[in-house]
Image (cartoon, rainbow, N blue to C red):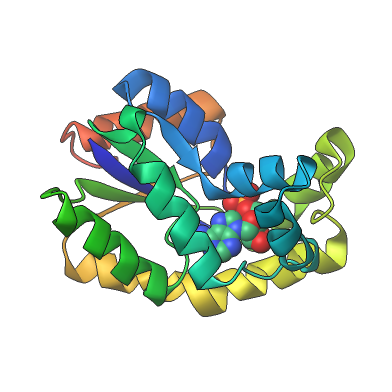
Amino acid sequence: MRLLLMGPPGAGKGTQASRLAETLGVPAISTGDIFRTEVAARSPLGRQAQRFMTAGEYVPDEVTNEMVRGRLNEADAAEGWLLDGYPRTLDQVGVLDDVLSASGHRLDAVVVLSVDEDELVRRLTERAVTEGRADDSEAVIRHRQQVYREQTAPLVEVYEKRSLLTLVNGSGPVREVTDQIVGLLHGDAPARS
Ligand code: AMP
């Protein structure tokens, strides 16, 4: 299974990625987590990424793409993966396509979590208190939503054209959202409201 998890900051990608990875038996690869680990280790990559992250901007494509290429070539990713937070730009979509075609694989699905913006800001403001992330201040939270709208939301259409989209309402309880995603991936009919 090769899966992408998309959605604006605060939609619950990280939470759902770890739960899904366990259920599906593939590694969850979160570019945000990798960057945060590198920043904490003060590595050269961390030093490059830090100022962009703190400002709520995307780390430049060249840097991010190289990191992801390396990660996807690791042994545990040979049989499948779930990418959380990548790709986020059209350039990254192209690189992922190249990585996939070079290994003779293709994407199985792109799950998009949606949550309305007031709820996103509320969740992230709460996370600022519980996790103390440097990019969870209110101004940066709003900026990250804007960057998502401008640079990442257009990717939904790209994957829609490829008939890969699975749209999921991410505002319910964590378990229900996971169950809904797993059901949809297994081909259940979408719930009607
Ligand atoms: P996340 O934890 O996924 O919200 O990511 C936190 C931050 O890491 C983002 O605001 C970006 O600065 C950086 N980042 C994560 N993934 C990417 C990506 N695919 N492209 C560029 N920057 C990224």
